[in-house]
Image 1 (cartoon, rainbow, N blue to C red):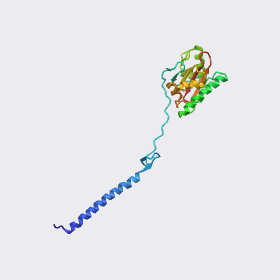
Image 2: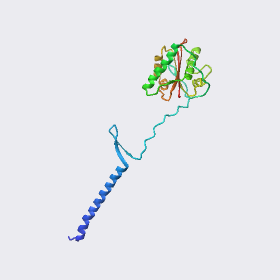
Image 3: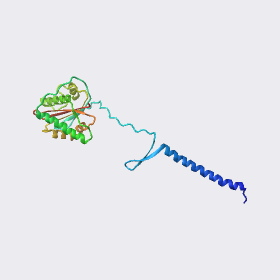
Image 4: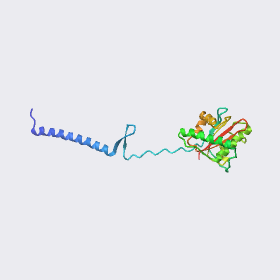
Length: 227
């Protein structure tokens, strides 16, 4: 078979031209990949590909305090109840005076609660005198009436009572009776899911504790707030 000499030379040249074109495309893709992205090795050995103009994701912001008021939840007869609430507003009031022994019991409650919060990664609660006043008042009310409830004798709710004491961001309340020391009272709350949620709620930042040693007790109240 005969073939024109010009044809014999043109076919290899065409093949070379095609091959060079393919190589040029591959090289262009590689260069483009290097320009717009890079690979970084993470600490766990995996790799992540990202574009250079990507921005870091915005950091999560804490959720605002709940603004609902769930009903009270009765639990163990010697353990207390809890409620979560919001706020109101009223004049300030100082905590009623107590003996040094009772004051020590109240401080110990805060100590053991803060220990539990630290283990859960929550910040320590600060003591607010207005919540101390509210808590002491309620422990005295329960002792006077013999009723182990959250409501005051006049029907006021825990958050109503906190508001009257001058604190407007009431968050929760735990009550207990019959425990002879703070460690046992706090342990009873931690063993109750609803009370434990209050103690380990990282959004709550302040507290006040009230204890009275009157008959039928000791009576324990811990109030919580959001600021």
